[in-house]
Amino acid sequence: MLEEAFNRVCTKFKLNLYKKIFNRFENREATLTAVETFCMEVIYALGRPTINQFAYFVQISQANAAYKVASLIRKGYLKKERSTEDKREYHLVVTEKYMEYYGISYDYVRTVMGRIRRRFPQEDVEKLEQMLRVISDELMPEIPLPGDGAVSGELRS
Image 1 (cartoon, one colour):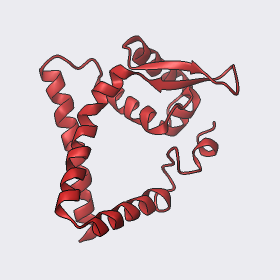
Image 2 (image 1 turned 60 degrees about the vertical axis):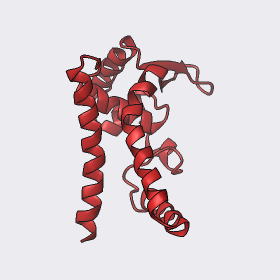
Image 3 (image 1 turned 180 degrees about the horizontal axis):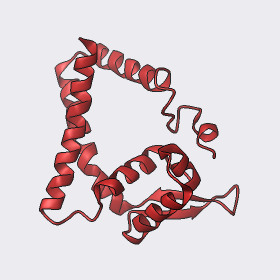
């Protein structure tokens, strides 16, 4: 069944991320809580959102979002950059420290994609990429991401 196969793949990616995060807790390297990790994942995926856009997307109050952002800035995972269009507005930008932390989940994606390229013919890999783009761009309109065309308008609060 398609749903079951897709769910298994998604679950394996999530479990790999959680395993890596818990490993960091075990080794006392983690400075992000689980909720902060989720916040950083969202901010990174949204690609330089404002605090308002972040709050709107995760459906929390602006005050709660500001509190979480301030903590992530103090820990060195985020910084705020002034907008070039509107000097009153700041965009959230992930730091190199976070990118090193984020690598724990992206490394596995790279590993699996390498295995896909070795296992399947090039035309199948290209078809899979095309299908994934259609799924992301057309079949999942509820979750806009940068590059989908709808993000700037839909994330405005």
